[in-house]
Image (tube, rainbow, N blue to C red; front, top):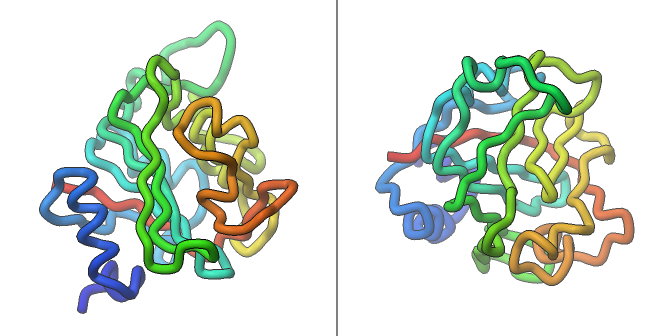
Length: 190
């Protein structure tokens, strides 16, 4: 059993990801157990990639994430911007998923984005932020350090994805929609 299949502990969950993404296999290209959990490290790995799965495991063993068909290149991200240091490229194939949560253990769920939204993975033009490591617009903020309760799911997520509330990802009612990430992986499919 490889690292990824042991991580998700259930090969049927891996099959769900394959089916949803039309990928036949995945390679781990980033793992917080091996590499530094910083915006610089993560962005350098992501630039210009396609078929990317961002996978978050919480201390309560919830397992959820996002799929991105394309990530902007470093050249695009680092062009001068007028209004923001966060740059994203609309991705009509983006979706959220929950592979395991308190409400649906081992019951994979896929949540599509609503039409004409601008939801995307945003990268920072300076590859720096004092706290945010990953920002999926209108969806998830992953903040450092690991094992702290700073990360959260936006309450407005239901306006951009077909979810009822952040609870669909986190698997339990949570007024603040915070979660404690234990591990974070980036997978690339092909």
